[in-house]
Image (cartoon, rainbow, N blue to C red):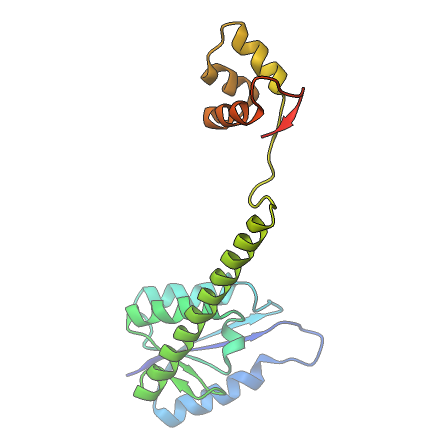
Length: 203
């Protein structure tokens, strides 16, 4: 017996969307393949952009309890709107021994072709992520070459107050704590400012 979960989702309830359109086709395929439908999980009026949904959460919980062998959806975007979310779920299904079937994309991770497509999707996602990282690095390097500051905004620091406190016998650590910044930042800004500093500078 192949225990199968059917998952359907509609994002709105007032635009003619009906989860039965998805479920009818899923039930037909389940009957054709001899699957036993142990549950239908339907999220109504819930955006696919949300990784946490009541019925999807219930489905994932049942999968983790080893109650399912197959999860079938009508289309990828009914299950997940982001590649990251989809891949994370499919990787977890793989660890749990649960196959994933998407009718419209004709993906079935129980078949060699389905596994190959899943691997390709994962590789493309990793490639896209690496491109984004490289673009960010290139942008930071270009900005730094142009003399622009990259990173968090520098905190305003009253160097005159810092020097007065130090002259009064306070340690650098004590002064840094009083001004609410790391001691290394205080030391760096004092070095950068030199012996004579304006009343207030940025840290």
